Image (tube, rainbow, N blue to C red; front, side, top):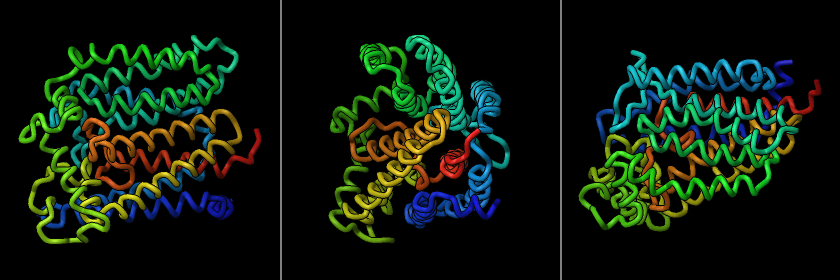
Length: 364
């Protein structure tokens, strides 16, 4: 049975996953080789832990998630509450728990557990009125979303929104309800910017709209990121090229291996390298949508949609902030950026996606 499930894995997704993980190790090393701490070994150790977790999750029938979704969601909420009380403050946000041997970010587990619970509810509420389904899903999302927002972790809060709307749409909630919600949300943006954000977060919005306003302060990171990517040209400067903006310290050394790793890749490998990486992520999303389309039941389909939009949002926001398309939010690039808790949650999510594919022909 184990060999049968191994042979039933979605091979394109599996190969693409390992290719991106390997490229991620290379990218972390290439971003930090000139520094005393380059994080590559630490990321490799996390992978040694997470790859067995991926296969274990893939081989277990995803329908068992129905039993564990709410308990995992509860653990994630407790983690978010623990952050408020005992969390470690990093770069202005109290988002991390110090576990001694590592730091863990509960907001990442909260998103995945939230996807599980949303999929569980939406798959069993087809006959309920749309407004009731929206309100219940809003409550499921709302509590962890608020706890993440007050850390303050704007990026972690933004991730929820595309997932929320994508899953509601996939669950056949009429588009007019979703459009109304989106318009209401847009109307609250000025209020949130003026009263719900820290000064440094408002500065990020300001320099996103006009990077030239504070080039030596809040606009430094985005301007240097644009310079680095632009200087890569068509084919880039190459691996370990001399006098790159990253080597010279113009890119933020403390987060270049996670938040701004695409800036390094753009400088080293140019437009061509960035294009192929984007095509890899696009293929990743298309394969995931195919798995969702062929899922055996509504729960599997909605779970796959939530996972894919989690990866899509992280990819879009991370690359977007390095090229000035989105504000700087501190979201890592999936499978590429350094980060133990995020790679753990990512591999768990991909295991669930493979499980949906492996067990799609089983009927209960």
